[in-house]
Image (tube, rainbow, N blue to C red):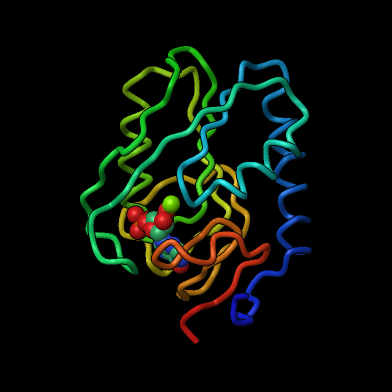
Length: 173
Ligand code: IMP
Ligand code: MG
């Protein structure tokens, strides 16, 4: 059993926001060929919930990225650990990310995908730490802005732990 962690965003609050995001994305992409791309591993829970709230035909794919560095901060060097399994040229691509911290990882990924000439490229992130941003990325769909805390759960980890918590907890208390 996990030690009970301090709840930062409850399961109910997250699920409500995911429904709202899904509804908006459904409206925006009606009639378009959509590929939803989840970033591994952190977005896997959010991604699974979000795609089920998007009432449109779609393809799904995954992108794995890691930034070298210690566990709590990014180093600025990004590596693609798992590439897309399909071409995205002339397709509408929506990247689904768990959290934008410094923005360095996402800036790199967006630039990389852009080179493949998608019809459009948008970003949905569950969380943003606005005070930490170093590389600015435009977030088209945002779940929550959060303060500069280290958070875990709902896919997010600390040294690979806590990903299965159904809520988001604040670890640095
Ligand atoms: P960035 O390049 O600094 O934006 O780093 C983004 C990545 O760092 C995220 O995709 C997460 O994997 C990780 N990360 C940043 N902040 C947190 C956090 O508070 N909890 C868990 N992982 C985090
Ligand atoms: Mg991540």
